[in-house]
Image 1 (cartoon, rainbow, N blue to C red):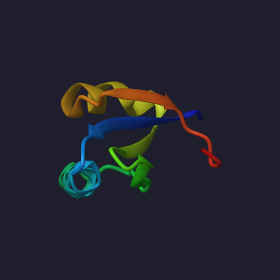
Image 2 (cartoon, rainbow, N blue to C red; image 1 turned 135 degrees about the vertical axis):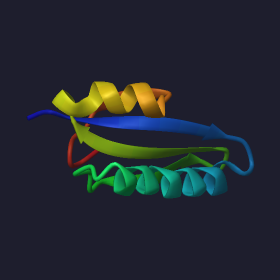
Image 3 (tube, helix red, strand yellow; image 1 turned 30 degrees about the vertical axis):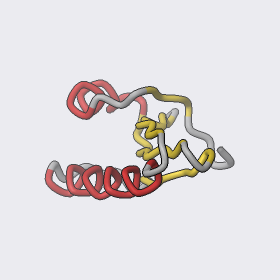
Image 4 (cartoon, one colour; image 1 turned 45 degrees about the vertical axis):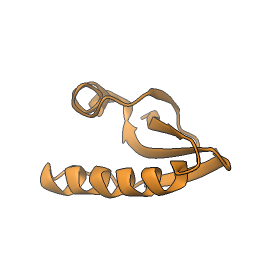
Length: 80
């Protein structure tokens, strides 16, 4: 089963703090909906660009995408 990484981009001097806060809300949603999602996180791409993300099975992506409205997505690999 292919996995997808749903991504939310945050820009600006507070991008890292905003992404950290967004990840808290992603984890709350996962818990509230009792989803089997174990991979979430943040990545600092630069000092003014940070992403928050979660990883989901491709076949379960559409309803979660429609509710959470990520900015973009990509195929997830363990090394990425």
